[in-house]
Image: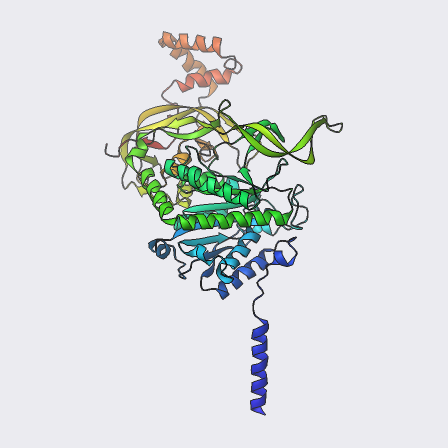
Length: 586
Ligand SMILES: [Zn+2]
């Protein structure tokens, strides 16, 4: 009897095991390509992949402010999931990221299918020959669970989706430099641990209508290492365009129209700023591919296009792994070299309004009618495809160039700045005792803060002059030497006029505040004494009164002007506390 029970139990268990054979159809496929899975289902499928393949590891790289784990799949044919081991083995590393904007979920659905087809079905197993894949199916996990049918009014599916920004209302794709979000701080750890040789960020557009299912952006200008820019421009992009065309997905760069919604006005393509993903990876000496599917196309078509482009990119990097590893290593070495610092370095660009080329743009016909509702232009797109011959403005001109120092000196009290540099894995040393030395730095004028917040901050614009002066830096001062691979990013963070500098994000706002004053009854007397003693000062005073209409509006302004000419004036106000040195050996 006991035996019979045992054998029945065994039979049931085996039946149970049999019925637990994983179902490999994804949630998206089961929904007839209409729906995308929630966070829990996505994690479940990721774990199922990892549990059933020795080539896939499921791990997490941090926790969101609402307590969700940030998922990461690592795919390696040797079962090596440690960054050191993988790098030693000579494999290239590619990082694919989805749902930084959770409503834009194609990368998640395409990526899960692709990893299954690589590691479980072994359809594309060869892609792992020289390649390790890092896949983040959902980056903005909290935003992903703000789930609704009504999150993206312009978008043609999936039926429900997540929300664009984090629970703190921050856009992670504006946070790469300042790293305010916990999610970004965690991401930076993964990125800098692995330093992937190639990076892909999956999105869906907003904006105009046109024929392309997929548009893309890569940094091929001088905001990126020259050899890597060439590799993208001459090798990757032509092959990618050809492949995508042959698969029925002609692609075009992710452009903006010179006039909103109006392709006839011309197309614009500017170097990306480092607050967004591919602009950031450019400064990290890593090619970054931004995929933007077109939101008006059916969801399935967008996922299919993303799948093709991911598969192509994996194949290309796998085939060219050795070369790409060499190029990224050389770019790192060059960025840390003295010859890199010899040239002036561009930290801000604007688009040339004269350099353009004529291109064919696969648009749709449209008419512009005067809206009787708003009085504005109403762009009415038809369903008729139309090829426009239009001007593409794609040349970025540097508008701010800086001399790179041997080192930046950051006084220890700027703790938040030092913390941000640490998030970016910047190498630093600390002064063990006070040091007096001549530094180059900046004096600011006309600070203007944005009235409305942007990413939770009031961005700042300044005018500046370069100054050179003797300063004493206390013990504990942080020394950031530029002989490191991160040099490009360091310059963008610490040069005040740089696009997305920490100063521009408001990290140094307090240096603009006057904290000591001369009382008016004191300055009325003092100013008279000063004028009596110094005829030159009188001339200067008269000139100032004649030339600056704001100067005479308030008695306080005039008296404070006299105060600024006394030795009591704050010598640090409006000055950048960070110093630049050509040599630390002074
Ligand atoms: Zn997006």
